[in-house]
Length: 297
Ligand SMILES: Nc1ncnc2c1ncn2[C@@H]1O[C@H](COP(=O)(O)OP(=O)(O)OP(=O)(O)O)[C@@H](O)[C@H]1O
Image 1 (cartoon, rainbow, N blue to C red):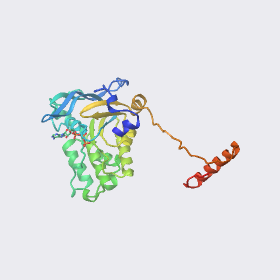
Image 2: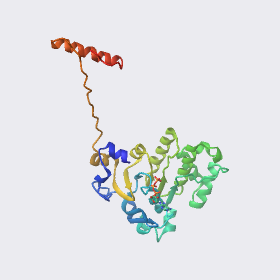
Image 3: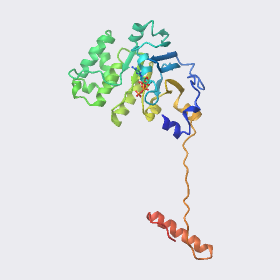
Image 4: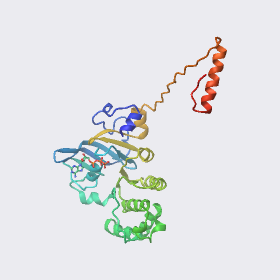
């Protein structure tokens, strides 16, 4: 995060303390899936997140970015109802999370940072188990569709203990999409996954975002840029800026700067006329192109 700001020629102090999500870009035509109102979580005497105000839109993937300890996991934990906020509220499709937690959970899909899977069960058995808990009305055909869409169908009879790390992540993500979850929270969905599997996970997320509000956390800037409709940068528990990757780059970034400094080379040219000096310079350039030897002439 800091290096991104540095590369863009920005210091984090350039940002206002809590730049509103609505600043600069107008998403008012999109349905709001989730909104956080003055969300604060205090552990002991320390605020893990403080006065977070941001809206997440349906049909969007929004990435939470920030350094270690910025408050991403805390925000995710509050969004999934794992902890109650110290103050503030979360609205999920118009329902207050605190007072309607059971109704909200029916529409909530979660992929935790670490896979919560059972080694001795097959891929299909996982889908059946979580399907039974989350969406008992779902038919085996609908579960099969999820497996197809996430590319896990060919691996349906494999026990999870024999799956690769990438496949386990895909299975965890498949589970998050069971039951037409409208709010899907993905905590570092590509952690520990090879570049090829990462890309197929990106495809799954993009394919599934229609009619859902997807909120994910990541440490990968490239991933956030490729996947996100919006990126929310957190720092020390506060929202530093939020917007589409394009908007953030256009508005806050200053592009990359390349500074070239020409090294002074002292040419010991005895000749008085300039053509000799030019010739010497040319020889010098040829020398330096051909090898790293010091130019003497
Ligand atoms: N259970 C807890 N008890 C006390 N402090 C906590 C607890 N969980 C998180 N914190 C503190 O809250 C702050 C935010 O932590 P959080 O895990 O949300 O950050 P993060 O952005 O997810 O970091 P990472 O990228 O390392 O996962 C940190 O200072 C952390 O030490």
